[in-house]
Image (cartoon, rainbow, N blue to C red):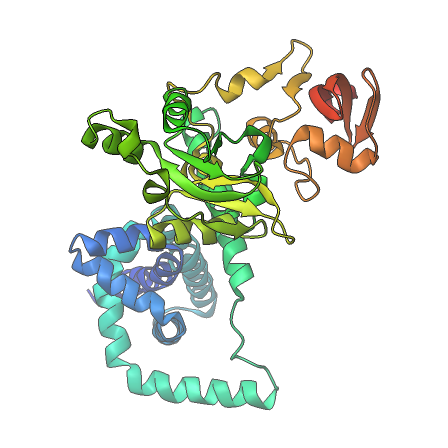
Length: 425
């Protein structure tokens, strides 16, 4: 009977040690995002796990103390019992088997389970660990104080924290680790998440509509002519200029003009353009997209004009342009052609692209790593690196990519053929 109780107690102690050991692994590896989601829905256990994760040093200290006490008790009791009731040979065998059982079922097995089911394990263990942390708080405080004094004597600085850049890279790494093999929808989600993080690094000059593509109207035109121009305008906001096309003096909302036309019952003489247009909003080309997105939200605007350091007009940036940096090209009924028509993949793996195709679109679609700091379009990218106006048919090797000029107009590259490194090997 005594022997049976001994082995039952031993099994219980090993299981308890395994539970404590697995709890530490589970609490460390549990998904914080999922736990916050559960806590928001009212899960009390999730809130306890989050509280424990906020002070993991205290949790780890508590778990280690409990685990060491249990292991110490197990080894001590097994040694005393085996020596007292068994011969020397049997005592050694029992102690060896106990050690093996402790390694397997108090360390390896529970940690394997905790890694596989981290969040579920953490939710189950949280109430018990929370109680242990509270109960052993005085003892843990003393032990941690001794540890801190030792670290101070060793001149180890514990006040340093992860930099914002490191936290950002950690988030990028978590996105990359998320598996999307063979799943196009998951791959698109990963691409959008990475694009959101990139917004704080990309200047508006890389996403803006260039001035040569702007739809503008001369404010000095007769109202009838302005109305005629607005009927063919594919945009909701139109910059108005005076004297020259780069001297923007206001922005006219098409909806505002149509409302004024309706109120005047079609009498153009009653419409005063100066009273309908709003002041233009100029922003520097160095503004980052994330900052501009915040500015759009703050000012309740969707349209801004981009200028360089000399105040010269470069183009415009809209809320849709920023959203397209996240989700990709957004085509509507007014777009002449979707972005995909500007990129054609050939059977041999080469790519035919318009010179105005953004480099970011190419990198995102084909998972390339073309540099983006020199230019925003593939045509501008070629001219930035070769430092001259190329001729049709010329072939250049830039960053491992072979780029052939297929068509140009004046000083502008209109069409290129791109041979990625894998295709040119």
